[in-house]
Amino acid sequence: MLRSSIRRAEAGGFTLIELLVVVAIIGGIFTVAGTVLLSRLQSANSDGDVVAAMEAARPLSQSAPVASAGEGYAPPTLLASDVRVDLTGEPVLDGYQLRTHYLARFSGTFRVRSEGPTLTLRFPFPPDTREIRDVSLSLLGEDGELYEPEGIRYDLSGVTWTGATESAGGAPTALTVVVNYTTAGRDAFVYDISGGDRTGDVSVTLTVDGVEQVVVPGDALQPTEREDDLLRWRYGSLITTSPIAVELPAGASPLGRSLTLLRVAGVGVMLFGAGFWYMGQRRRHEAMATFRLGHFLLLALNYSLFYAALAVLSYWLPLALSIAAAALLSLPLLLLHVSRITDRRFALRVTPLAMVTLAAPVAAAVLPDQRVLAVLALVVVSLGWLTLTWRSWWDAWVEREAETIRAIRQRADVARQEERRRETAAKAEAALAVLRQSTEASGVALGAARLALEECHRAEALRGPVARAVARLERVLQDNREAAKSDAASEVEEPALNNLRLARERAAPLVDHRRGVLTSATAALEKMEATLESAEAAAAMETAEHNEHNQHNQHCPACGHGLAEDARFCGGCGAAHPAALGCGGCGDVTVLPAHLLRSKWRSAELHCGGCGAGLS
Image (tube, rainbow, N blue to C red; front, side):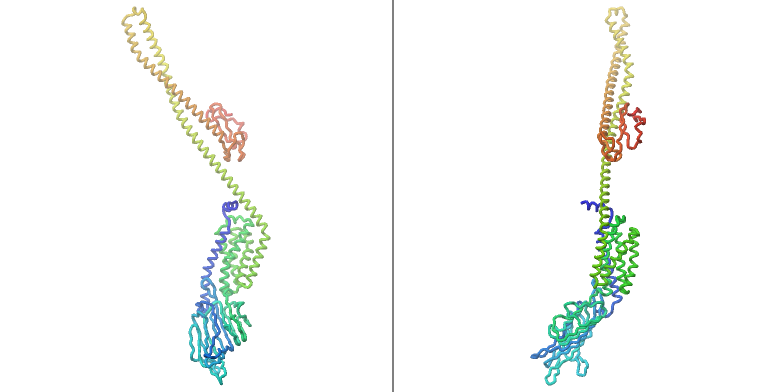
């Protein structure tokens, strides 16, 4: 689980999957492009005679001639066979496979003895032969000259001749028959010299031209003589089921060597890529963290240029000169690319790795007989290098993974802190929204209270005159009542009494109106005072709730960590808690960021921003 998280957390780094992808890309490029290139080289340098052999379907398998006498006579005896086969071959790229196509010139001289008066001789051609050239069957005359007898029948299956045998005094007669033909084959040539019967003296001579390597299988008859491109088999009175067989592998030819070099390029890239990754991890080079598929693809192409150049140059130049020229073409580009993506010191250290991984595939390709030794040497060198450097590589690997784990944990801590900051900011925003709503409601209530207070002031201004007028009217009414009840009223003149009554009647509506206005003003004043008291109580309650919420849900302004009520410093980052200073005049609380102020801020004189009173 931890390993997978580490891999996912790494921003770069070359991986095994990318190495395999690059090897597959290089293999595909060299398979297609190399095949086309070698086909062009083959077409430009192929022999015209051998081009006709490209239609050969399979290896040639030649059988010994079959002879029969007339009815009632013993079978003829094959006294001697002298066969010469000249193979002129050339490696040919057939699709994506390399084969050796050749022209076989067969010339066989057979001495046959027959007991009967007639002889039937059949010489079969190789099976599935499509074309036979220069076909002839001749007899050796008494004068030593070859002539073609009558009664010969030719077809693609073979040559058949039936004729009379000349005998003197009934003694058996021996005939000398010469058969010649030319045909095409590929990869191998097989000649069955006996067909399971006893042979006479057998001499088979095989010469090979244009083929780098001739292999005699272990289950075939082994040659008695071998000199360079000539093989000879000499036997007498042989009975065997093993044929004469030779194989003509194309891998040892320049074309085969070139094709093998292109095919091992992917193996070389894989070895070099693994070693490059190992050295980068061991040296803990910082460039390896951002080393990606594109970097290694260009690096692999520069490295593979050696194989492409060697495959082309070795087709014309000697092998040693071709290797030197290919190294001069590819290694400077390779080291230049390594030095640009890393540094010069690391490029110099990569040089031995490049040379070893280039030398081993080349040795396996150009020295097929020593291929096992080349692979063994590469294994020994690789194991020795790993043994000597494993301890330092492992220490670097452990330290790098520890750094990666620390980086992951730090990123996780930062993510958690960022999440806490976001949560704190969201809570603060929600609290601020509530405070804004309560502030707006308080502002509305305060406006209504101010309007009510103004109405109260206006009503208070009217109270005095109305009260004085009412008092004056009441005195007038009281006086009138007293005058009406007094016996002295008789002494008052009737007109004056009428005037007083009329004045009282006129003043009564005004007194009632003034009383109503005073009552309404008094009720409105009392209502406005109640509304103002309610608004002030609601504002005080909201302020208290907000202060209590802030006291119970405080967070460190430096890191967002939750703050305990009785702690003076943050448990997350160690910053000082915010200082809450209460105002003695208006009761507001002022919160100061103590972690951003100087150490002597407590001794300074501070004042409330609302009323200007001193803060404590």
